[in-house]
Length: 249
Length: 391
Image (cartoon, rainbow over all chains, first blue to last red):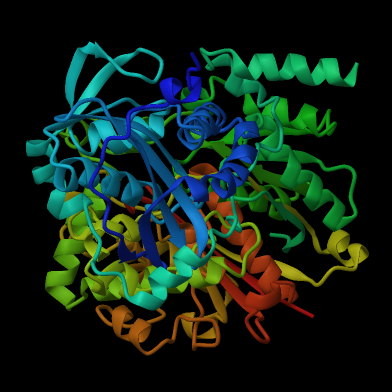
């Protein structure tokens, strides 16, 4: 008897409504398109996310390495009900957001990574992700965690998220926070923007190719950051110092 | 009094700096020493506002003078809130002018981003009155917002005028390698588009996100010397020709007319009088635009425009590079950044570059006279400086 193991390993192919692309004008006057991508786009995105793994600043390293694994798992059919949205400015990759459906009514937000800093690029992409869960898929709530103080400020404080601390989040098993439909409705007027449909030339340019970010986040110039290490409870700065010394040795 | 010249200058990027505070002060000083061609100075002043509270470091001047290997020169730190920088330059000026020292190094450093934005906002708010303002939750953005609302009612300034200041200064910062925000913004993106309210939300109405300066780390340095020393160094002769300082009530609500910034008016008048010039003689100015409204109001209080007409001059493009009196060519606090205690020295750095003709793409043509206004508290301690190129 022959068994198709790959078929067993793969997630169930549940249909999920697609995210209708939208666009918005940024403070710079640039137009940013947010759209859903499929598996065929993942290799390009992985290429642009990989350098961020080495950026020990604002938690880009941990967020990028986790996002990389999630994108790879999606590409290789190893996550159930995952989706990926990208934000593009002039074709350039500006942000990546992803998540999955925990159940019909509950969403699990994974990551929000801005490859173009400033201009609320990450905030707009996160809002689109929440819009996808609540408005497009019709879920009642989305479970969220933040891995950085910036994320905490953007999600927990700006959206006033509710605690769901009895539920472990899939990112590290830490206590979850929740964006409910009611909270999203409250945020709708101030935090959620975008126009549909996207003008065809703008959408075609975005779809044609995902260009690399022209000004991505970079590693700090000096990892020693001596005084910072005094307050770094994770000890990463101290670890970096040691590694740097070892490399020199 | 002896005449005092700026013989060297240096600056760090105003951004997030991930190295110790003493080095943030030392790097621009090293650049300034190299710029001047000097290896020794008589005295070191270090402008800083928050080292003890934010960076867990006291005795900053002692650390800096040793980092620079300038011992046994005397050294001390100067703290005067956000006006610390210009205050330190004033101390340096007095030391040289009085004959106490011949060469004085005035450097500065701030590392606000050691802590998060909420702690920074609280830290800066400690310069308000502890019992009459701070305990009630007053922050600098909220104070500036109340001030702006009153000013707008009285003089017809609109949110569009405030946004025009932001767009102009962001444009200027794009030409400044050392500026914090290299971010083009447009009126459409921050004011007129359907997304503008989200792109540029109110921080404290009527002030929006792009009306407020960023939280920056940074340092800057100028070296002051006698005419005798300056002549030997073969740099353009930039004289620190006027120094003015004035104070006002600690509490904003105790002022007879809250929309008048009398300390700015007084400090500027002294700085012009000492230099023997008038506001009309100034070719380029750096004004303390921690909030966009302040650039407009200060441009009136120092005498560039009549009271209540600064926004009209802005509309006419008179404060742009190429205009009648270019203001904040560096990008100002708004876009170059605001490392509080270092800001005043950063302003002087920009003026020195402009008067030397070294400001590259943002150069004001034939600039000979420059002016800075460093605004401490909410206008309760202001230091103004005038600079004149002599050769």
